[in-house]
Length: 252
Image 1 (cartoon, rainbow, N blue to C red):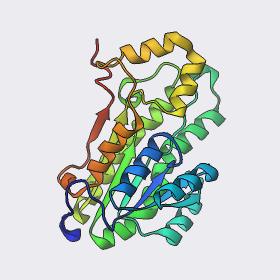
Image 2: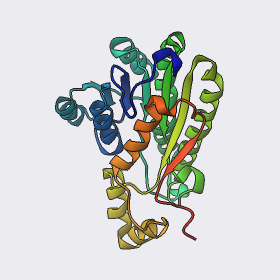
Image 3: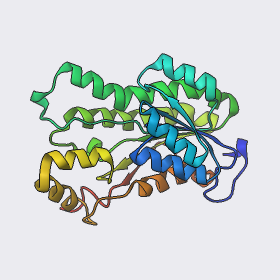
Image 4: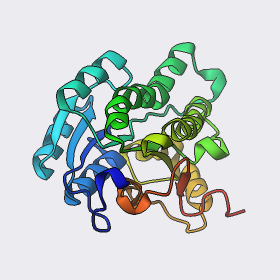
């Protein structure tokens, strides 16, 4: 983005980044990648012990935070911001058929997966607009595009993330702010391991066979896409959803 100048390929030197749900899994891989690229990173996560440990390893800052609480997010942004890059990564799933879920389940999953992106983006945008530069990167899921048996609410919330991303891209292009989404497929994370433990070998086979590459992805492979979207080399990309899923949905 012209307002900031152009950094070398894959570098984020001097940029300030916030990663929600950054203590574990994909979020932790993104934190490590951004820190190695020179960004000053703040990790927002309810798992303060893991966030603090990771922050100590990479020279980041940990903030215990419920990212679905807009007031708490605003206070954190005031304390640690402003940010050039915001990665809305926080997510949670509940593996159950829709008829076995409750309105309380819906509220919790929509809060973590969708409202958190609203809250963090809403709090970060005014400073980005004033600076004439920003990167919003939202972690959605291939379940948003394909649907998920046993994950209807999760899929719906992540679908909302894609629509939200496109709207933010439209509203903020005039400020040189891009908004893009990444849709991971089956990535080797604690959340996936919990699902496999519950679903057993049948679910494991179904997930791997749903990809062209017939394997799980690694968190670092998603982090590589996030680093690219955060970089100056992605300045002409906005409103897009990039799949990091081994060709999930194409294997048939």
